[in-house]
Amino acid sequence: MNRFLLPICILITSLIYIFFNPEQMKWLSILSKLLPMILIFIYGMYQKNTSTKNYKTILLIGLFACALGDALIEFSFVLGLFSFLIGHLFYIGAFSKLRKFSVSSVLFIMLIIIYGIILGYNLTDALTRGDQSQLILPVICYILVISTMGATASMSQNPFVIIGSILFIISDSILAWSRFIGPLYFDSEIIMLTYYGAQFFIIQSLSHQKLPMTIKNKL
Image 1 (cartoon, one colour):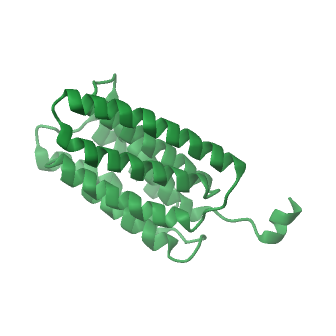
Image 2 (tube, one colour):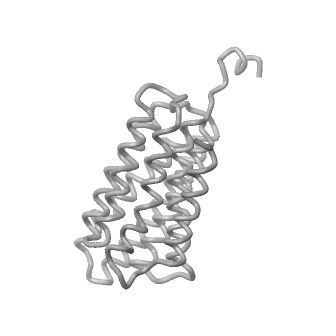
Image 3 (tube, helix red, strand yellow):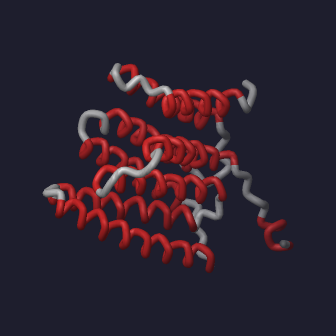
């Protein structure tokens, strides 16, 4: 199979959903939303695992949980949020297998913590004022989990994992902000573009070749 065929199909189907979403037809809308995720999953199946043992399996389970969340969130925000949370836990487990401490990763983690606190404060305030206090705990838990995912990704030294986690944080932040605080310009398009991009880059991390230790030492 041409190695560019699936990525091109993923890009095309993602753009079709983002800009031509048939919202008036619920099931067709959900299917068009899931199609890029199915293709990303198939793309992941074809990738060779060049990382640690079970990394590919854990990653694909996380991707499946996120795809399930894509469908569930159309019917229940809490169920969808829970499914995404499970997906992030699997991503955390996978990224943890690649972790290596460095000064840059520590600085990145500090930025994530500060960002998480600011986002959590604003969302909690908005939920309280909007009489949606029952969502505060699930939302805070989700922020903690996605922040942990970003932190473990920063220690992976895998550029695809790091890019994917940053895109995921951007996507979920805009989603939460537009849903609970206020709409943003082109928020739905940005949310899905960064979301599909995040999933693709995370799966693309399977193809990232590690440098042999002898070469690393010379560098």
